Image 1 (cartoon, rainbow, N blue to C red):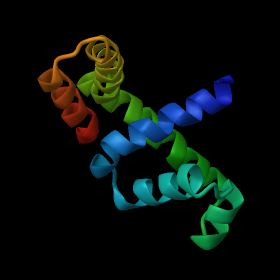
Image 2 (image 1 turned 60 degrees about the vertical axis):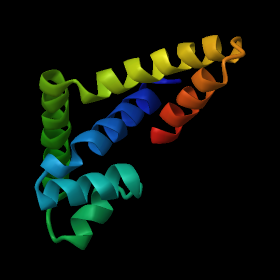
Image 3 (image 1 turned 45 degrees about the vertical axis):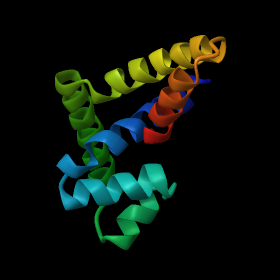
Image 4 (image 1 turned 60 degrees about the horizontal axis):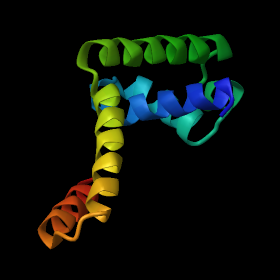
Length: 111
């Protein structure tokens, strides 16, 4: 995965975890830019602000999302849980214990 795509993916994941902590304007600009693929110019024109204002808001918001992650670790813990669940599923697949298989299926469905 190239750096730009992996950065955008990380920003989207951080947004998914921390979106409720954002202001309405931060949420709107993030959703439009990262989710709906609007350009800075399109957002600026729709809300009668400068492209620079949109850019600055997005940059501050991404920094804020990273600060939240540095303090709360929701994304990091999610990735670790996914990794551990995958290993667990591999081990359970080799087992013939139906209860273990049922429990891992339930865990997977919680995601």
